[in-house]
Image 1 (tube, one colour):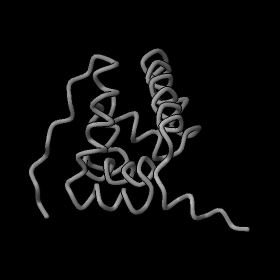
Image 2 (cartoon, helix red, strand yellow; image 1 turned 120 degrees about the horizontal axis):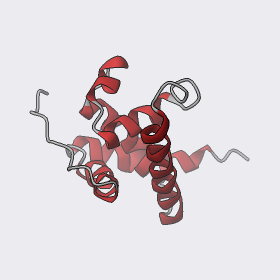
Image 3 (cartoon, helix red, strand yellow; image 1 turned 120 degrees about the vertical axis):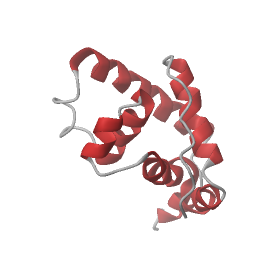
Image 4 (cartoon, helix red, strand yellow; image 1 turned 90 degrees about the horizontal axis):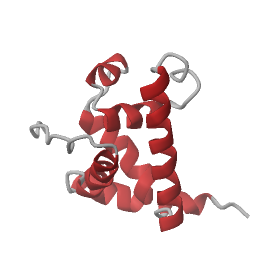
Length: 118
């Protein structure tokens, strides 16, 4: 039996909480030790998510990413393929709110809404 069907469904609340806790733990590591020892250890998506949380625009630029492209990457991880596409089509409000809640937890301001260029 193939359980790839799970990629279409959003993770349950426990999984979302686990992801949030993991990112917040990694924020502490980057704040304490810097990026260098983690860039090659963590996935590109994890590094970009952390850069977004930390408001580290230079880390986003280093990867050739923007706030919107990072939010688009994460929408599908957070909400599954179907709901991730719906969130992307709607301008990423759920994904932005999820990241903003984590940014509030670390004392960072909300993600600024970039101008729509599509």
